[in-house]
Picture (tube, rainbow, N blue to C red):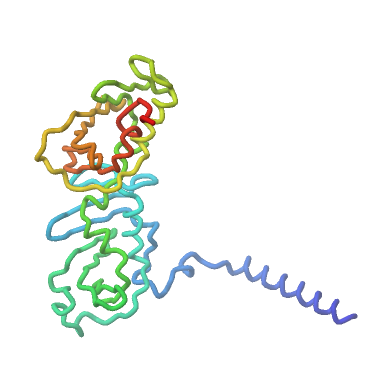
Length: 280
């Protein structure tokens, strides 16, 4: 037998052996858990999030494929922000000490900056240590030092956790009433009452309200009279009212019921508020 044939024969035998081992002793899911993670939970199994700070108490729930804010408002959440918060259960700490061995006041944990509850796990956020953008985090009975990737989502409050779209696609829209025209759904198509506008322009305007993301969301400043109001009616007859507060230097569209306002660049006027073509 030649040397090459012998090597090929040995390789074949090894493949058969490893295949048998893989079938006979499959890797269990719990063996895939990162043993260095702060908990044994998986981010994908988180269904409830509660955030408590000095200013806010916000609750989110996983509903189907996405997240909803259920308190203090009821509305769609920013899925990216919610999923990032859920990943805290799998973060790898850079150091760990029992809390009895540490002065919690010195680390900002005696009165934490925020308390985050993921399912039943409760995390307390303390100060940063100003070295490498790391933060002290307490999960009973230990204090950890972790990369500060989660607190920024908490510090923005409700504005950083709400869906950045005006009318998320899951809503069953029936009509949108603007100042001078109305759009309505007939079958699968969107139309105007006058039917004097291109169908693709009408459909695109609705799509923009469902998919275009605000550049910023801020607390509603109820200090000015709206330029006009815009209302969307759902198939269940529920009405959502918006206030157009400004067009320049940026477009500001408020949801008074949510106490939030959505900000868009002013060049998106024709994408959000008009069926006419922009001037050349």
